[in-house]
Image 1 (tube, rainbow, N blue to C red):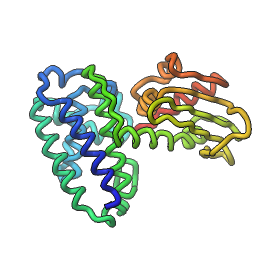
Image 2: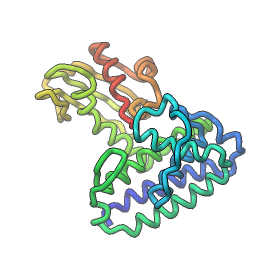
Image 3: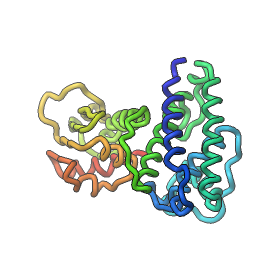
Length: 270
């Protein structure tokens, strides 16, 4: 089956979440995380509730005004599950998480290749089902790192999840440069990612659109060198534009205004 790697990526990431949160004192579930507005409990309820929804459960009714960090329909959808579980004990919520993710893995293993290729609803719009589930890896893996950061237990997790995250955010660079930075025709960008999944990404603006290119004929207008971990954290909105540019691990060569525009535009998580 061509999409077994997606099932493996979800299983790997969900198992890491469950292992990290096992036997935790209740107060650990109330620790704040790098995900704006959410605690450890909130992240676990989001991951649990979304899988319960995919397995047929209704979306809870949200009570009261949405918090300021909720900015779109996807955020409102997610917040309903988070609010509904705020009074649930952490170990009970973890048991629900284990149960529903096991159900999801069983459901995915039963899919045919045609099921994986079928286009349908996703938070990103109409997408093939394999793209939707790949996005589930991205979401779960980033939240796994949120949990690790909140619990002060960082780990070198270089599995399928990291590859999905870095590849997705690299693939977003042409859109970021062409549509979000506000730079002119012919602008060129070089991003050097440093680390296990390090690579160099080259983008230029051509006919008003950003496009990935294999090489540049001259030095780029903007060159940014940064660790893989800082790149995806900025793209996921876990660190600010100011923090990303100010850290000594990020080196900028070129127009400072363009660098700030890139830092502002780089956050692409829904």
